[in-house]
Amino acid sequence: MGDEVNAMPRVSRRTFVQRLLNVSLVGTSAVAAWGVISPVWRYLTSPPKPELEAGFERVVVSSLKGLPAGEARAFQYAGLPYQVIHDRGAIYAVSAICTHKGCLVAWDRRRGELVCPCHGSAFDVNGNVKQGPAPRPLPSLKGRIIQDQIVVGGA
Image 1: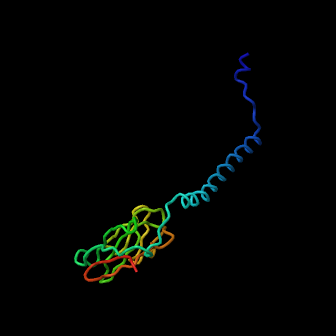
Image 2: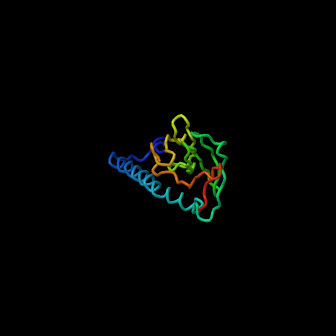
Image 3: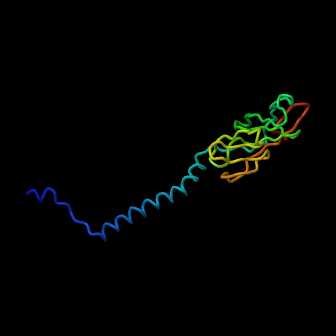
């Protein structure tokens, strides 16, 4: 009687290895499928991005005196976060959303570039990728100085 309680079906080595390979195949397939499904899911569930510039008014971000050369300031445009940078008399306005994983980039005055704190991507004042893993440049807006005001957007 005691033998019946503890009796476990014996599995051959071949059957065990086949089952192990099947489990590995299913796991690998699931990871590969997620790699395809995940970006598609993010695209389908993320809010639509408005066409920047078209139809949006100009936004006065700061006075020229309020943003000295070499400095940057965060602002919102069309409900999205941006950074405006005053670089030797030129004005640059770029998205503050890293194109890698969507973290918010910050201006590093010492380095003179926008830096993503999450994974180390770096962008120049035009939003071009200087250091990855970001796959694309940051979207930009037209920035200019009008009557001692830093203005972004519009036609």
